[in-house]
Length: 215
Image 1: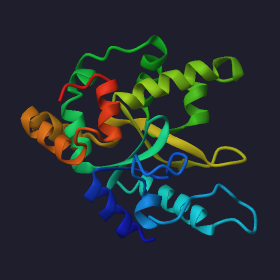
Image 2: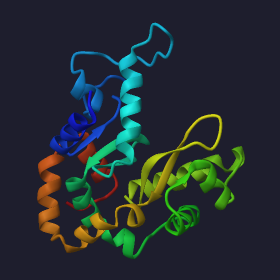
Image 3: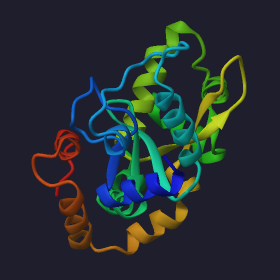
Image 4: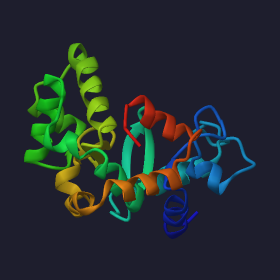
């Protein structure tokens, strides 16, 4: 299970979850790509499957490698995109960058990340005054909104507490090169790439339809 092989698999499929959802075959995941005949079990004791921990460590390495793009896009799950597919998705989402239609919470979160990226969950909550249990649902809803529109990405981890915290950042800050490519890409070319990697019937494609992306 090497980083090079994982990147190759992501590039080949366009998009992959890290771990399967309830061991379903679809959407495809890095786990199913590496271990197609093995069910994944979330067990962290001495008798647990060490492959889960190994894949978790690989996920962290890939997340800020810039060779692939890491997001919490599909149902809040860890999702990797190839740079090629992500650029096409950005091309189809340019209106969200130029004329964002966001809730106030999502707007505040995005403004904070556009000022400084990446930030840990703790840092972002502090800056946007969304700390505490009472604000948790507003924070989660705002982040889901931003991930769904490709306006933010996940990018590495930050040690700012008992456990490492996921770092997130504005797409325009962390992947400015891909956004520039997206602006230069014709929508017909973007459609072709999306249709190639996410054909009709694909669960990722259904998610795009749910999000009302016109392809």
